[in-house]
Amino acid sequence: MEAIIQYFETIPSSHRTLILVGGLTLFWLVESAVPLFTAEYKRWRHAGINLFFTLTTVVVNFLLAFILVRGSQWAVAEQFGLLQWLNLPAWAMVVAGLPLLDLLGAYLPHWVQHRVPVLWKFHLIHHTDQNVDTTTANRHHPGESVVRFAFTTLGVVVLGAPIWLVFLYQSLSVIGSQFTHANITLPRPVDRVMRYIFVTPDMHRVHHHYVLPYTDSNYSNIFSFWDRLFGTYLELDHRDIRYGVDTHMEEEHHQSIRRMLGIPFERR
Image (cartoon, rainbow, N blue to C red; front, side, top):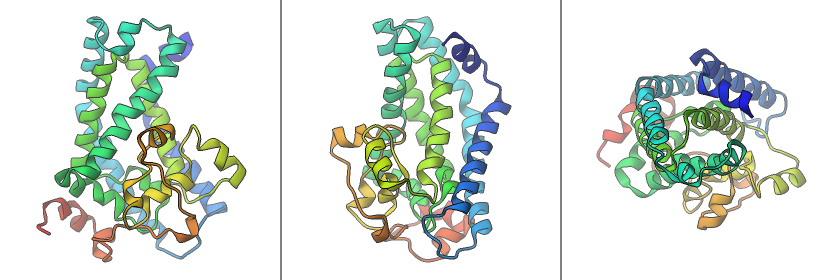
């Protein structure tokens, strides 16, 4: 445990980039070999659009990272936050801290963005993708990236999460999101057991179905039990799923970077 703490306390930016690129490459290769859907689409063009938004997400988080680090350092120094008050050993901090960071830094902002109209306008860029695959994971408007960062920072401070735990969670979150968006499906028995704790691709793709109430379900990022606990868990056979969002089904809404960047500012 001490080695993990030391590594993630000082994890180089190059290693974090390697995790992002390595995960994308791995799941890209897996879904190429055993894809769930085989409908033809311009895969490289599709990836190029999503990688553009991945890059903007990385830039936003890089520019604001000092706020996250300072927030964590302040909370630990002042012994502020739930994890600090409980005075847990490192292993227990991981067991409790990872799900709680997932709740406050992922599930909560995701739920809020579906409920607050002005925030939904930014988040729906993620939902306009009509060919969801692993590259969709970081398809976020820069405005949404700022919102997500704000919730993450708030969660870190409220929990009093040390920076090693934050970077551990973010590394797992990157890989988890790439996995749950990948164009693959697990054997049904494995999926049924796994989704009691973790989000699976078949569980998350329900969230990308183009109509309500499915679009407003399955918000969880890594740990699926938050959806079960808060009553936002739904199931739908993947054969019945159509990706997209019903208000923006035109091609220009999901294949034009310029148009997608402007969607939040349109009057509809």
